[in-house]
Length: 182
Image (cartoon, rainbow, N blue to C red):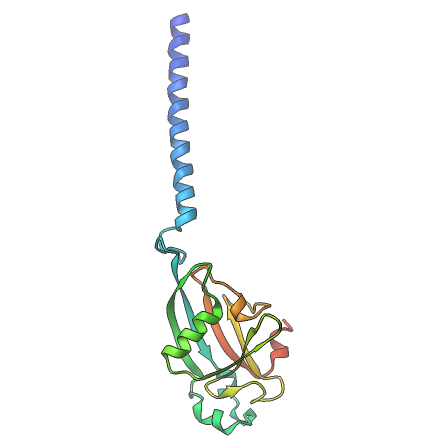
């Protein structure tokens, strides 16, 4: 009987070792995927932290009702479809590049005129106008806003750093109060 018990305990210890090795391999693989991203995910990047994001700039709320515009210069520079910059991909350094950095680069590379002011003790950036279309040009509540992944952040674009995979949308709203009421 003791020989049977010895064979059973040897068989159990082999199974325990095999399960232990498999467990360690699975844990190592999960840690690797969490750090480097899952295949096909937008968070994959290279060792330098380089990731990609997309940005687009629209003013289609105004194109739907040009009668709201009080700025004649803006009327002539608004595209018929309201798309100032179609969705474009940019490389960023994760954790360092801000929404404003991507915006500034996209506008510079595409010849899009902007008017930006700084305010507050920290010189926060405020985008006053894009493509000659500025705050209050389509009514007292009209201005430029931005979204990241379909959400409006609560702070200036130069304060929000990106991780990679984000979708940035700058858009002109004819009534910002309606943007925050939902």
